[in-house]
Amino acid sequence: MRALRQTAKFTRNHNAKVLISRFSPASSHKPCNSSNYAEGNYARYQNITRGYVFFLYKSSSSSRPFLGCRSLCFNMGNTTNKSEHNGTFPNQDSRGSDNTGINVVNDKVAVVVSDDIFESDLEEDLVQISDNPLDSQDAEMASCDAEGKNPTSPLFKILMKAPQCSVKNILQKWIEDGNMVDRGEVLVTLLKLQKLRLYRKALQFVEWLEATKCLNFTEYDYASHLDLVAKVHGLQQAETYINKIPESFRGEIVYRTFLANCVSRLNVKKAVEVFNTIRDVGLPISTFSCDQLLLLYKRVDKKKVSDVLVMMEKESIKPSIFTYRLLIELKGNSYDINGIEQIVEKMKAEGMWPDLMIQSMVVEYYIFAGFSEKAEAALKEMEGDDIKENRDACKFVLPLYASLDKASDVERVWKVCEAKPRRGESLAAIEAWGEVGCVDKAEEVFEKTLKLGNKVSSKFYDALLRIYAKNKLLFEGEDLVKRMKENGYKIGPSTCDALVNLYVGVGEVNKADLILQKEARKNGIRPLHSSYMTFLKEYAKRGDVNNAENVHQKLRQAGFRNRMKLHELLLEAYLNARIPAYGFRERMKADNIFPNKKLAELLAAVDEFRMTQIAQSVELDDSLSYLFKTPVAVS
Image (tube, rainbow, N blue to C red; front, side, top):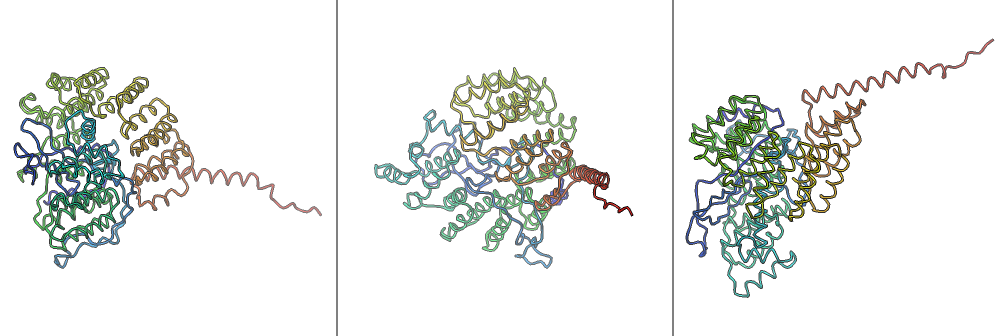
């Protein structure tokens, strides 16, 4: 654990692309009270950013991967809470007391969303934070189910058709018609509703289940209800609901669900309070809860990551695979390759072999740090003796070979999959061919995927659109978006982001802004952080201070927090406009932003314009001073 604690000894924040994947829990369980699921294997679908578990049927022949960690979601319709550290951190103090904590009242922390791992800027984190913790492709597949393209439950169909104002009445009538509520069907229905982000309807469904006592609620059921209340109504009402849960069911699962929601909103004060409550009521501290604190402090105060690791070591809490992924990400963001390798060795010593996702993370950090030979050696290890026998590795190694600009290896690996590609492999191949500049081959894979049948995820369209944007193929990009709409796809935040890059790349900045505003209003979406940053980078390059400041204001209004990169770009706009940035230091201080080396250099550079203006003003005053001299009387 000492090696892991060293992860927190750095504070530098570099832009990097971070990967998070699905994972398969080691254990499987049968769902309770389900007569319809007597045969077959059961997969435990666990969303590690939430406090509940779904039990779903998985046939023996299915190769569909388990749901796993994605990013935490924001509260739909609510503004992220502005919070500071205030309270105690769960740990022992210097006197050895078991229930006291490290005082963090006086710490000043800039509460920011860390560079989102699903966007190019590192806020663009384990939060990019995406608005949906579940995979968007799964959501679209659920949408296909709702349209009747795949078999689905009658209960889900009824809920999809029901108006939001009459969900409970329709459910009651359904029961009166002689239908039965089955636990397995209920859990499948809830999962699909959440995939489609129909949180309010899912909440009404759960409230009806609890009120009518159609099911005997367990702690997991109460935790699911709590999670939906937090999503729809916010943390305050979720906390009120906890007090309504019977005390016998108010266990660690319930509290850690609430903790995960506090973390997703970056509410440090409330998260620490909930963690201490788990300890105070005598419940065990799980690895899940510790991972949530690590995720929180990774975003708001990396120095406190070591405090969590110390506490885990003292209380003999073993790190999970997610713990190691977080620590590798932290090391990777500081380009600490030796630190990454120590963490991997620590994993192996603990009997936890790095999975393909962790191996791909390590390779990507090798590439970012310029260790190409190490990256190639690690890629060969990921492939194994025969890539054909290790097919699962294909979708991971394709984009990595592309990052190394090895088109021959991309082609070699793709040939293994080409005859009968899986969707994940096809998406990876499109992105890889685009990375190495083979637009025609990316288009070929895209068209082949569409011909396989069934509605594919919008991710495929977005991937090809980004390739067009990178290569400034405006007309091809516009045709693709038109085709996308004709095929019934809605324009989401990711597609808007690709469109912004397309138009900004060819110099159509105003058109990009108009399209973003139009699609955001039409589809009720919040643009991604990276979309705003694309505009900001362009305005900074042009020295367009007014528009750069407008983008900064839009970022604030959209709920995104200020970060170092944002202030750097604003200063670059002032620098390229050759005008002083009056009051900029005070603005940074108000935002809890402390300048790094690059920011300090930019501040010094724009200060020179202020001194130039002062010197010019003094010279002007001297040259005009004769006008204000008192005339001397002639005797």
